[in-house]
Length: 69
Image 1: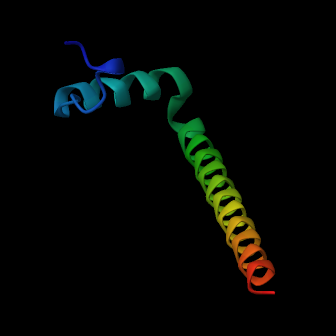
Image 2: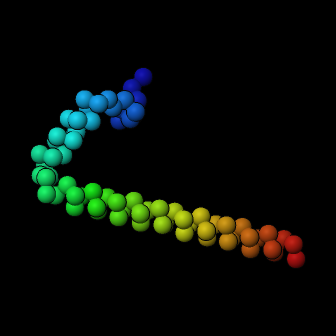
Image 3: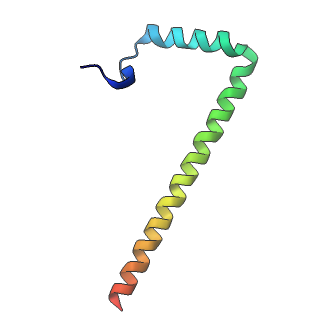
């Protein structure tokens, strides 16, 4: 059975090859900007997930209050 996208099967050699390809494509000066953009995206995603979880818990709390009345 082939695992989808071979996730979880990357070894050290594959990671080094991927890093070299990224370095060749983007150059040394662009990589920090790229990583900064990825970091901002991850932070934004986490904030969105926290907001959704808060809204769900608020809805659950309101539903429990209505049941008690």
